[in-house]
Length: 598
Ligand code: F6R
Image (cartoon, rainbow, N blue to C red; front, side):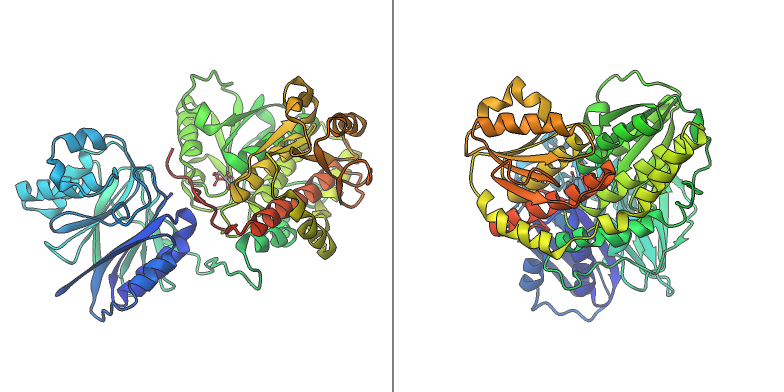
């Protein structure tokens, strides 16, 4: 979380703010910029979204070439206030940081309390730098000495009045990239997306990299050694995402699913499934371990059913934040798959590092090319969902699960264990996803109308069975993150082992009733709740009058078609409820899109 940008050049305020707008998805509790010119210093910090910062700095005009840094924050230490917003300042320097300085309390003890204005972990960096500078009288040496003292994760940018032409940078376990344009000018940012239009080559820094950028040169070090710098071409087709007539990115991204899925399938589906990007014998693995967080974890959980049904391979799903601190006994012959939209999620990344050390073969299923998880994995498959800007994941979920479904077929093919009939049936179903994922206008209208009945109550249960159970988890996650209602996904068969005690008219149950899997059993579970007066809304293609409410999907015979049409319903339902409550569904409170801290 947190987004950082640094720039040297003219139009500096506008450039920094434009970059921050592209990074707002990483956190938007507060933001700030610091600009140093020959004769001028400007610093502004505001609470809330970048538009507040833009407004607060509207009178600042600077036509000179200057250096500047900017930050958009997702609070870890200290509340979102002006004081806690970055840049943090010392006597003569300014710092911004994404990550967590784990030993900041220890380091603070060595310094006078009077120095500190904020409650953040970051502020310690600027005071350490200034102490070191006062001792060493050399900016780079002082910066080096400073980062040596830090433990944790960081992407840091620091500027100082002592030179007014250098931006110092350092990276450890948080993303940082340096871009260059044709004139040899540099720009720094947490992500390619925040680079200016004319940046056409890029390096993604490695852990332990640090150095200094000035107007037309850059020095890069790792472990005291000077590093060669190999810039790569930056794809000029930057995915600047606009709302294209939709009011919210979330809505646009829900509607986009039927078209982005075609990109996901392109060149991978014919009369069989192929992944030309893979250079490994996929049939040789004895089992699969999948690791992820949040929505990506829910996609992984659903894929377990597919890997077991279709590829007949034992599959274990791990929550990254748990796996990394266990002492797991992992099958050395397993394929370890990391799933991540951003490719930056700290916990998922750490698990990947851990299993690489153990010698497991690793594969990433990811939406962002060149992200940390992609770069570190032995092999990767891109989901090609396009830039997802809404904080609540929608199209990344459907594309991830589609890739995993295709992978299960691919493994079955390579192991020679899938019949021609089944292969044909699965491929036909995959090729029909385009129409399954289309959002019928009438469905959206129905959900909009119905959503007003679900604005109170003491909570939601999303219940389902079999592969639909992880979808219930995803439905509950979507609702809670944007509506702030308590919602829980539960296996329908488990309700009678405890949670049914909660049933009353103020308990809302959203029940997934597919025809393709365990229909009769699921129906009985729904009836048990109706009998105990829970308010029940069924999502399905039959049993219209069984419960209080019914959201109808088309009749499909394939489980994944039912699955994906229910996915659309759940995404729209959570969005409509949240909108009725007046929430910003693209930027729900307390959340950030890329969770780069643990
Ligand atoms: C929920 C959501 C999060 C992410 C999770 C993992 O809508 O977006 O739960 O799914 O933070 O992020 P990635 O997939 O980027 O690793």
